[in-house]
Image (cartoon, rainbow, N blue to C red; front, side, top):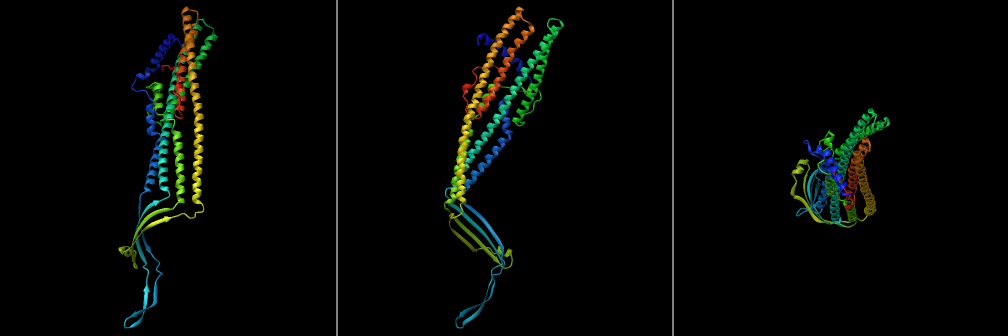
Length: 467
């Protein structure tokens, strides 16, 4: 592209920028930015709020795992009414009384009918076969995985909002282009009708321009409907966290360039989250093997017990009031538990945990292969979009050159004015196609940025000032 052609492009684009962007510089409503949409969606998006609740849940599990390292103190109490059948009466006993000799004595032995026994028990685990540490490690890994899950939810929210935002910008560009094309078609149809009345063109030529006008009217209605759908999709992506704008001019007010908004989305992307999440899930599954295997080892703990006792033959109230330290029972010791036989229950649980680890390891490997394949496919789509932009620039060069020729022919009076207007208009149509293709390229890059690494050199070297 020579310097003269570039100069014409800059002038033409500056003119279209002033015409299309004048609404953004007037009025009290400022233009939208992608940052505003993402900030609004972050505070209301349900998937993000759910992931935050999952973070609280995972943090609580870490606290539970840590609590197992500390001693426990339990209090319990029993108040009982006993079916007193253990009563022995009429038992003959012999008592040797000095000076009197053996004497027969009748003995009655009663079990109290009511009993109260409050109890305190303290326990401290000494050895659990590594179960407590494995559970703590598993809980910490689960917390990290949940945090990554939250970040993935944020990434998905950013991707959804960004995609809807740029589709809205594309719809606005297409509507602006359709509006200009309709205005040109209307002008050409009016001119053709006037020339038909003057007898300067044939009826078939006037009919051609009339049909072109109908086509442009239909295209404009289609673009209006597409803009309506795009705007509704954008508000849905931010879950209606922004005020609704009913005027199309305000729906299409943007404060930044496409590239500025894209750079904001680029800063928020991380292509490694999926891989990190899968690795943490696999590590947590490995810790579950240690948790289940701990049941195969002896469990050793200290315990201390204190129990006070109260008895009565009359009522529960008297049994409770009879509780005293003098009737207490205390004990302390070491408790060793060994699983001798459980019909293979523990070993089956260990086998299940090992199988889960193997499954996750294979799933992680499969996901890595899928990401690599998807990466290559999407990078190809990016290159294709870039190539399409290059093709459109070539078409613009041709359209500009043809417009220059037609202007010279029109000045010399060697070409029909209607034909000249139509050929000159193709230059602006080519610019509009480049702007739309630029948005399509951005949308293609977004899919790559939020899934895997993208090479920055795939971005088109040539860009145009936005309308």
